[in-house]
Image (cartoon, rainbow over all chains, first blue to last red; front, side, top):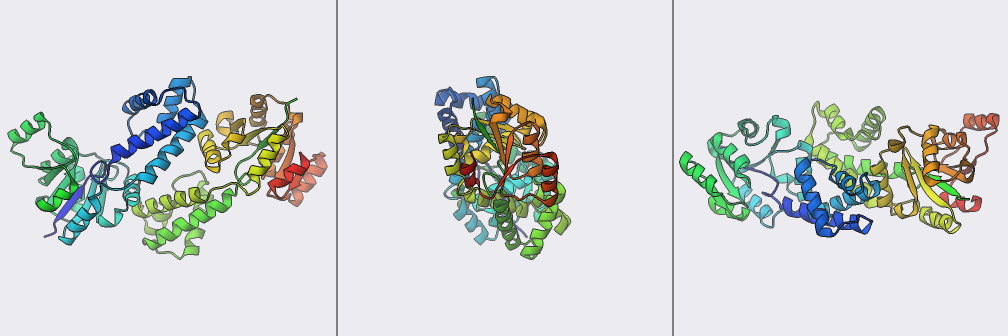
Length: 226
Length: 226
């Protein structure tokens, strides 16, 4: 019987938040050099606030920033910010140090590998390609394709059906308890939380519901479990 | 009195078409390596046809290409194509060899420099920044801001008013007769056609209308005229 391990991408396979933070700070510094009249930490606080309001997939954070600071959009500053953000992000982008060897190991052990991710299909493939990880995955299933986001059961069902394997023979690995872990156990998959810790209320919840999950601090520890 | 020279960007300041061609061919070759079942030249012909139908600012040419070839979108191939296209374009992007020295020369002679371009404001600034030319220009005016495209007189009027100069003291430099040249002379600016030749019907037209324009084959020849 086919055994499969499904992964979340962001903050599971690579340090998404860390790279985004570095890229945003670099972008703001270039904008400040070109005339944005804010101190670096103040600009970062403002940008974070805008990202929180608009969501991280909104692509005009710098437009909003210049509007808030100048009362109008500043195309040169916006363009400088966007170019710097993308250049820094793409230049630095790489998996967590132990991600590639862990994936190779799982392949050697005969696991089929997949991705279950909330996001746009082509964007998620872009990330995998830029990370150099796309050759590892047999199936990449996104909320874009499923029409629903994790933790909705249907995205997990779609992934299982595309991979051709049963829930009982499958594991979900992710960093978000409410999306990755709960969604997976609800369809009968095993689940492993990585790069994240259970809160007290989550601990109570899984105890009450009799859910069994594994918690690991580094993706390399998958080797010892699987 | 303020003297100004306005430039078009694409195929005037840099070889837009040439870089796009190289980047598209590189993208298709990567897609073919990854399973697109077409010969290189056949794939390029199909892509050109799609670009012609959808317009060059449409951002889903590779989506259409995979739909036409496979009957459905292939996200991995699309993502590989897009990443390669952008990587190649940005890696190679630079001005025509004589563009920077020509702009420096015009600055030394006391000209104010501007851009009048059909396109999105932030995209056009991005091009100038990536080309390393954005410091030269006092004003960048786009169809996005003007609400009309070249050759509409209003975009030229907006540029003159933003620069604070009269049409009679201004020159437009561009590679498209019907957009750059006709638009400029209609508002009373001088006009210089670069990287392009007049067709017979254009020659007849300017003779009949008594329009005087200069035609140069290389941007460096601006030095001898201005």
